[in-house]
Length: 274
Image (tube, rainbow, N blue to C red):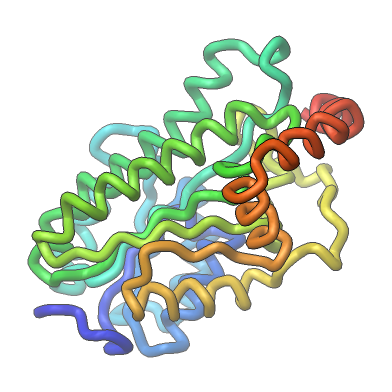
């Protein structure tokens, strides 16, 4: 059945245990959708699935997007339980901080395994179901794909890859009737800055971004769901995010100069936190 704008259906979300992923699950459930929640932290998504209505409404599936076969198994389970998929959101990701000289190649590989290959594994696994429903694929990228944030080279590169991947996929999948929406958030209320270079959540880590700069996760989720329903190509979230991307696109030399000035202070802090 073809997904119609605004109609309830089935949504699958990777990285659904916290942050934007959890908020997206809650927003789609609020809109009457069935939700399929994927993450490594099974106890979290199991509790969330119960909160969203439990059996018949929400399904929790253990999935590590860095493992070949996990996404295919999760999609198969979703199709078995709910009959198909209408929206798939590749949200799982984390950030490896540190300057280039501080990072090992393994650090960069680990970053790409989740943020790039994890998105690609999700898309590969979801393609047959989305082709049947003429549905929507969503990749959560970052404003960091456009701006040279200090001491975040590995993360910046990985998100730039997601942007390029979506551009290519959008062209290829248009003939299949599948929309591709690239979401580039600025600072959103989440746990990403409390995850270390190894991809492990650290309870002791504190949020490093001032609260006044953080967009609430539920606000972001509502805007994303609306953009997906419209089958938009791109959504940039937060005012500072829109400003940063506009600067990078229209005044690249000035943007680079600003970040060069910020690099010593921001880079030293990120390196210390990492």
